[in-house]
Image 1 (cartoon, one colour):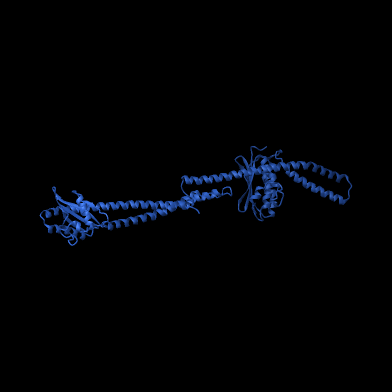
Image 2: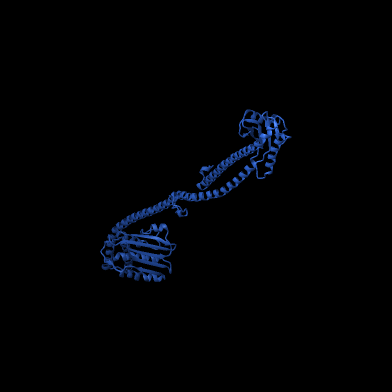
Length: 486
């Protein structure tokens, strides 16, 4: 079973980011809610202190003169005022005034806490309150939180100039904070949902934007060695940070590996063709000597022997066969160091004249472009042979009413000529063995023309390349250095 940590980054990073955003939002919201609750507590204490101080100012003279009714009116008026104020969300439940003996002097609700009733007899909560008041004293308003109580109590001493007459007790319900706290909580929840609604989609978008290229990079790296993977369009990422540079480095590495493999294949092909050339030349030399002897013997036989017509017919047939063998063997004996005049522009036009009849038979459109304005120091015989071989090969491969294009000129100190033809495309395997003599992949011939062309080009220090120019065009390109020509 796959664990969460084994998931793809395109899922893991957005999920981790979303969880982090949610946890952060909850932590911040919790901190703000706690702070709001503490502020509500502080506000309640300030309100109680303010109310207690304002009431004790009026209660002190009333209690000093034992004016119970006036004491009752003061606290009752305060209760009515708080209840009538709709803007005040903190509701005061009741107010009591007790003397130093903890007996009720006045109560906002006389039925609940009758006058002269001992505070301990009102109820369990008030008994605990009485115990707390008996054990503590002070001049400031104090907040009293009793265990298991449903109320909050605030006690303000009624005293002046050291004379202590009693204690003002303000009673609030336990859920006194809830209306304001619920309002703050609701607003905080809406703000949190709004923030999450923005951050989570953004996190998902950026997480996917960051990780999908990484996933593609991983997949392509996994294909390396099995086949050539596709390049990464790192510009879609749009940033030049470490990730963008990683994609660029991958494409550069892929291009360098392709270039390296192409060079290695060229070296292997060159070595293979060189070995084949050496072998063919060696065999050709060995065959050529006895072959010349046999042709000489036949010629002597024809001149000095009285043979009947049937025998002469057989001898002629043998002579033609041996002649064909000699031509084939002669094609294998390529020697490009023979002396020859320099190439001139008329040689190029002569080649055009030679291939025009064959092109006309197939109704080919021949595009001819000659950039040479003067002769160049290259042997005309062999350059003409290269052009003729490539053009005849192009004419033969082109479709009926197809196209053949020829271009020749000087580029960077090299003679460059290219021949392009429409027609059937060669496979990658055919291109690999294209310049080998007697290749089983050769169509319609023994392949000696291209092999001879290859040998001549390489003996002059040049190179020849066959490639698919488009979906229906093949192109042969030859580069021969001018300065190194013999």
